Image (cartoon, rainbow, N blue to C red; front, side):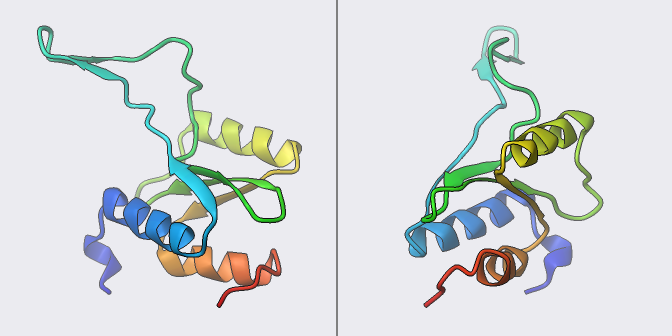
Length: 116
């Protein structure tokens, strides 16, 4: 696949589909806010945590994981880097995914996760 034309939405969907296929408990995090059609703006709940990764879940070994999806020249924001530090400081798994294969490789090698 030509990753030069991949959107972050497509990457998120590919990773979610893969994780669900492997029976890994996970979900997509929506931190965009609620659309207000009268003002044509988004209202962000002030109780939402800034910088939360795109995909969150729990691995079969019980470890919490977070995956931030980035394509092209997109980079982590300072709040995303802070979120990463908090996850890793609490023994969670955090990865920045630029393609599906990186997630597959990480799960196979780093976590000794059985992949059928």
